[in-house]
Image (cartoon, rainbow, N blue to C red; front, side):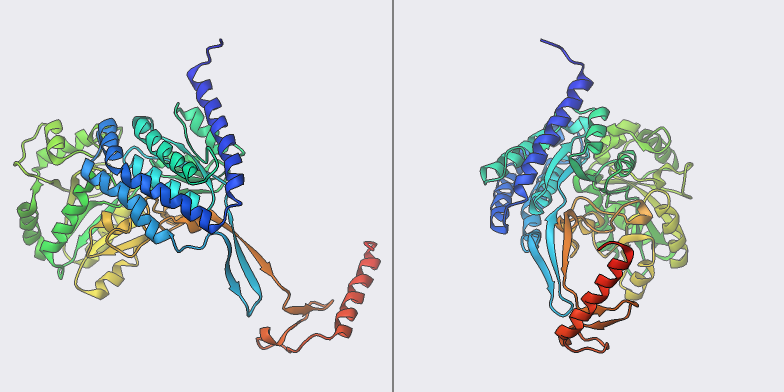
Length: 495
């Protein structure tokens, strides 16, 4: 028996998964709404039943986050998501404009590739599986190597649940021998029609350079501005709740707190009261060195860790019960490491004179790795919220926990774990991604105007009249038009 190298096995497995899933998707494309809903309901049921075990497996394997919060994410990515997407029309005629006589028909995109991050492996797999099947697509996952077991398990559970409810075999697949060659093969193989990329910047850029449609997510260096009219205890509570949720592993979590001088002391005291610890300049420098490798690339050992773990790793002492670490920063960029995205329980802390300075600082922070993603503002002044809505982000989250607001837990935004950053952030969409982003729309358009040889037109039916000459077209007029066309074709030699 031949022994093939790991990379060759990895690429061949990927090809097999893509071919099998594409064949399955071709069959799934013929399913009706009732069949698809039956499949999704069973997937949600299985996800709910395994929410706890998947959460434990994810924390055990990656070391990131908290079991109780990953349980919540697994349930949010299944039960809550289902309630939101259930009424969506993704099959057959989804819209009909009787005035302009245009009918819209939904068609699946085809086979999807799902790139899964190590920070949210099981919830992302559940979420992408459900939105894919809702739109009658198949999906093959490329897991992060450090989250291989839990991603594989989540994908297997979703596939088995779908098949048990009537879906074709192999409709959801997952690479079990991950490698860069395998990921590149899946990105570029003919079977894959679209890529949904959630992960690091390099992976997202690779997805966009694969030569096919992609929906990617950029980093979320989210500033949280506490304006002078804010309810300070509530603002601080929201920020701490958000930043400690799964130990800061969601890209919509706050990264910097920006406060005005006039409320600085109140805000600091409130953070201390609620479990925040303000580090000394020396401690801030120690933590900064520990958090980042190679410039501002995060040290994987510090991702999704508690404040106590980070303090211990950096060799500093903090009070028992500390929830978040805060380090004052005087600028943005290479010399100020806490000004970058930190997917853990550490916040940068800035003081500004007024909202004008806050505007300037938030812009600098966003262009330091978070443009297009999200911004958080705490204010009781509606006009101030509108002023900050001018910032180059697509989620302006007002008086809420940024993590929960961005993914749609505490706001009316679509429940999602893929948050588009628009063209400003290098993404193809600025939306929270739903099944509606995973369909093609074909249009059946009836003629409503007559077109003459010289390009003039008139409306063919009274119903569609919109200021034209209107009226019903007579048979003589139709015959005359046909004669004109035939005459032109004869002159060209086409008839």
